[in-house]
Image (cartoon, rainbow, N blue to C red; front, side):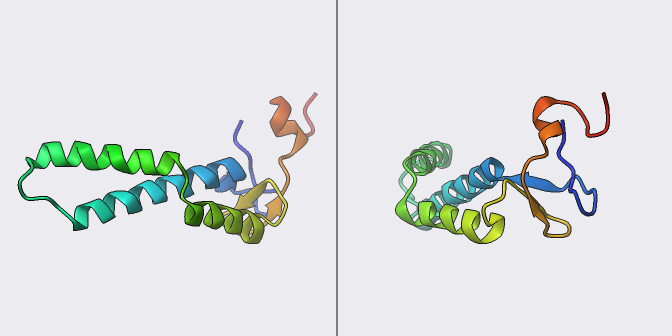
Length: 108
């Protein structure tokens, strides 16, 4: 079930795990872009692309300390101890108990 904001009822709500995943994807993209800067002309472009993607995913899997600290900052300053963040109004809240059990509040 999709979590909705408790204030504005928007469905543009992100939880902590989704935020971690996004930060890790950005970290992998950064690693890929750094590899792009040092393009090796003697390699075939397709081979280089696959090699660079493989290196970027491997680097993201090990979570660099700067990426880990960025994840901690996002959790501390954006979520502030709550589970969910509304991207529309900025409200922070814990996952509603009805969303965890698959029932909507007020339904029986």
